Length: 279
Image (cartoon, rainbow, N blue to C red; front, top):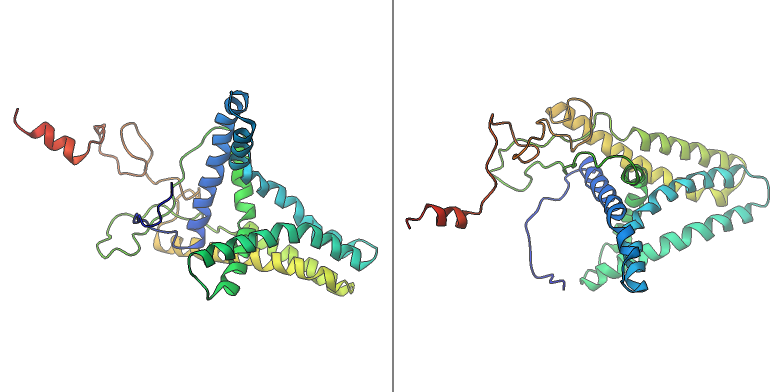
């Protein structure tokens, strides 16, 4: 059951690099969960419909590595000899089924919530953001398919929205983050120039879309990482955002400062009051 009248205060990612960190954790975690429970679930006594739904739900992030294979399509459409119309229809046959349902889904969700204005701007922006995060999420999905569990990656927090926020900021962006996305943006800019120079104007919109998506995410991530370095909040080793400046130890939450002793397990205020009360 979903009750949208219940609210829980939380801090949303404050910049693109914080969002990338959150997305990496979600994507990698879903694939690791699939590795852990899917073999038992598929071999269990549950109905085929339940198994199919679980399979799709837990492995949907594997679409990101597959999406990277489509990055060669604009180059092929721009350089392959043949009728330009054929290249255009090939792009449309692959892109439209992937983009149109997403746009309809996002717009319908906002309309159900009662929103009527700004959809023409925000829905395409959300699609471009998803495309720009493809490389980041594909890397996380591949990491989730193999290797050890690794460290639990926190979403960088700054205490935004709280006047009394004086706590230590989490280590945030990798230094010079977003470089790979910016390289992809340059690649698609070159592809667009090649297509335009060859007179294949129908092949130009697709690389331009990828150029905007990867350029936006790459530039925003780089700006966030440079800001973090300037503020002294970047990981000192250039590692990912989830690598805390404090090592994780037994009995202590990751990211909390060392105390020199092992902390007792956490107990609620009610249980502590009950223990302190006289018999």
